[in-house]
Length: 94
Image (tube, rainbow, N blue to C red):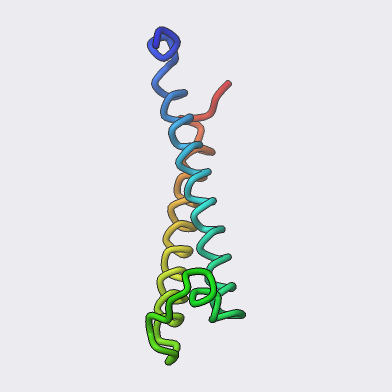
């Protein structure tokens, strides 16, 4: 706790941004992985979870692909914004 009181606010902000950047990159990678898994092997949902939510018509797989593609794009843009914020001169650590 005492160390956080002596750390300049710009360094604390940078540490938070770096953690958030790592989280966003991780979510983007996971989303891309799920997107391609569903694109290349649509039956993985039925095999892993043991249920067929769309009764074989493939609509659930398309929904998963759309949601993972959207979440990947959003996470990539958020990570890009955080990367630029981290790289800006105001938040650089000495």
